[in-house]
Length: 147
Image (cartoon, rainbow, N blue to C red):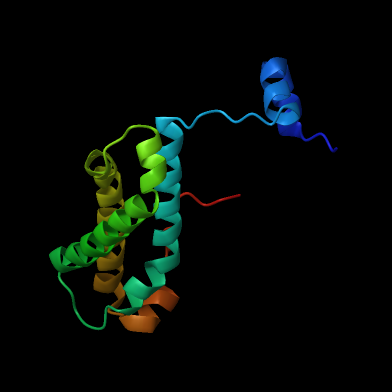
């Protein structure tokens, strides 16, 4: 067995916990913060993957409020889909799916507003649309980039 840096760190923090996890293969019960964090990361990953589709769909002059509506509609649908996909994990930690939506939506809404503003400002400055808008868009916002 190879010993990773994270295993050494875990051992220094709590040798017993490392023994329980690695030797006895016991798993910790899920925690609310872990489940919600996983959900948010999954949503942001999907948002990053779909950004090009949203931007290239903008074919003509669009008002700022219309851009926000496009993003809000898209992100609302994504959030609902991801909550449904993770429904069993959410229930494991005794959370209500409606409450999870209400708690997560403000974060996702902020992301929608930031991206809509970025696109709107770029369109105003360069008057580009569709594929050309996506190709020349800077900065391209990437939330929670994995390293």
